[in-house]
Image (cartoon, rainbow, N blue to C red; front, side, top):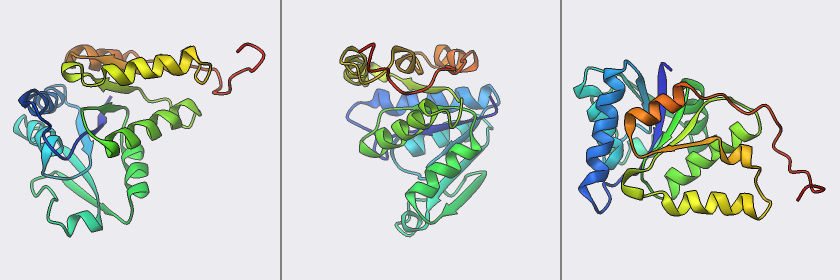
Length: 193
């Protein structure tokens, strides 16, 4: 893996552990010579992960829509800042540039970006690892809900297994490096439900 896209909050959250883990993930990516692709902002966990990579001598590519740059949140110290027209173009560019995806804690935007990339993988549009760094149990309820989707017949178990999860950075990166995408299609067989 040469580049990883990270989706995360534009705020720091209510506990210092979120920011410290974002910074540590950034430092670990730099140490492993993995470039960061992210949303391009200098605020919240987004700023923390970028600063972590940069402090470790790594490279950071930000992808930011023009309308957000005008709000003066663009990170000024990135290796490269790519400006795009829309949020959808942003996700497409981030997907094009990366070899895998990690979600850190965040809000609606983080979940929307994460699930779109996961859906694209489920549909076979890419075979990249999609991962959650489950900082301090932040995503526990979501992980349970994804299992509920399987239990209720809306998701195949093999597609549930596409979501790589760990609360340990090195363990998560190792899972991503060893990931093999499923070869079966998305569609659920109603005869088996």
